[in-house]
Length: 410
Image (cartoon, rainbow, N blue to C red; front, side):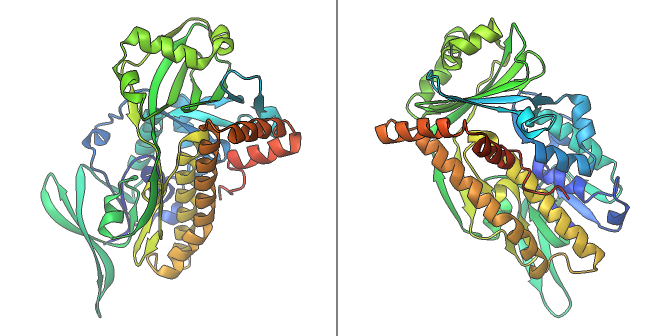
């Protein structure tokens, strides 16, 4: 019998496992935690070093610091963002968000996903109260309540065949197409965008100086995220109509189009640019929100509970804040000898996270619609918005929330 059984050992699920681990927290020693992951490559330490990266808010890095995993990520390589420049196409309207404005060492960090996963899995292996169940696939879940017991029974398929696991609390951290959410029959609201995000990595002749760029264009946001000293991750939002042609371009022509999107001023700073990754990873963004995050003995976190447009890079940070809120609720409940799967306990988590998640989902949706719109009214509105953000107080308020400083790491 597990106290907590987590489905999904990606960045959010593995973070929760580490937060409930006993390596740096002796109080967790008597918590029996299992984590189910279908990707056997993770067990072998293979984390797809394809250049894909996530923007980690300063507040999220502090959450990882408190758990004890941030040092491992830093040793493998994280890139601090000292400045983020927001602009619309080639127009002179620009907003520069600088670390000095908030008195912090960085606005946030760009961390390659392989670095994050390798660090989390290394930490998890050093926790004596964690059991890694990998590779394994969830086949079914059943809430069992009778006179003798009240638990969640999970049927899994692994290399040793089908088996049943029992837990006081089942955590769905298995992504936007969550099997746990579907098996629990939790309804969602969702909207797919008529856009595709193309992800690739470039190498430049000169250093990016830890500057990140978000350029809003007619097809959607075009983000340039710094990696190491002379590399950058590109997240290029293209329309549904132009995506097939862009993906079909040969390498030289694709690079030419990418350079155009970067804009002449930026290319002048970076010098000669080459493509580092040959692959063009791509995905269709969507926003999704679960009607509820909880059921008896079941809880959803991260993309299993909600997804958002990647504009402003808030999706991963919402998942980290979910994980942190749930870990704090469970640790306090464990100390008070409460039932971890009780609705009264899980309601504390949902109350902490629901409105923050909904607020970011709606804000990113509205921002994408305003900045990906040809309508004259919206053109005037977004230019006015960029001008208003030159006001110091408004800019500081925006940065405060973007950096995740409104959510305590403890």
